[in-house]
Image 1 (cartoon, one colour):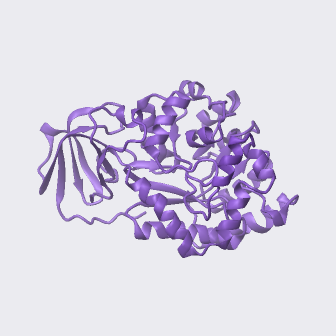
Image 2: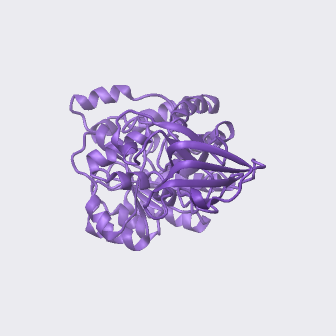
Image 3: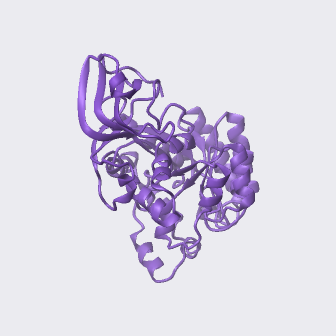
Length: 401
């Protein structure tokens, strides 16, 4: 995204605790100088350059604005009834095989207009912005025909035109097999997923390519066909992998140099090693783990030992993670997956940026995008510690509050 300077003055934020996410260290008496949409300087307040305008933040904590790197915020309908079914013992896979799950959302999404989809999505997006989020990844995947998949991505692009937020899109037509292609998943790939991706690319609607590699979705070989086309088009890839079983999807993603592999409850040693070698980010989604009442946690200790960056996201979707709170995802990441509070904060800033291929975001340093969050907390750990609270004082998007 091209960044234009919208502020004609150099604005200095001072009297703040600075958590730049560049080396893990906090600066208790820090300052940040913004020049339009970019950070010009960050460091100790005593060394701050001159500025045209000064804003004093009374000792509040400043971090990069948050990044939700895995969402499905554009969709139609609700799946509250399935919540009750799961409480009565039905599994996610059982519901999907019975025509519910993703396919029920497909029906609702196909019936919704662009205006209806946008209005529904903005409710979720507004909740995210209110918690300091400045970047949201949005996937297709609830249309499962070319027309609706493209409509979803057009709506995703439209969000950034009506809200102060950056949207990064992912083509996820390989999310499920629609009823009209039951038993013919290869035909669905050939007739919908691949030509639809070409059309989305021509229209400028897609930033990355995703898929669902699972027994109820697509095999590694089928995902490989999608990734081959993505590579031909010059598009990065990411993958829903090892959520419900171990199929080697994470290793496949790593072989394609994927930006991220997501979920990963069933990732094994080979997956971890492959991701470490490829620099693929592990995106952990505790909202889905919680909602589905899973018991197998992602191999966090193995990721940590191998140096695999770990990100956190809401996985905001109508079925397995109807959650819009990235702050709650941080708490869940610590409580359910045993991340440290520092790892959780990195997971929604610098590592989330990496999971989207955003090189100058998620950190506070000279040259980075001026997306900042100001918090009414004294300790960064409070962001992950509190349950259901929102200590956001102010959010700066492209240098503007």
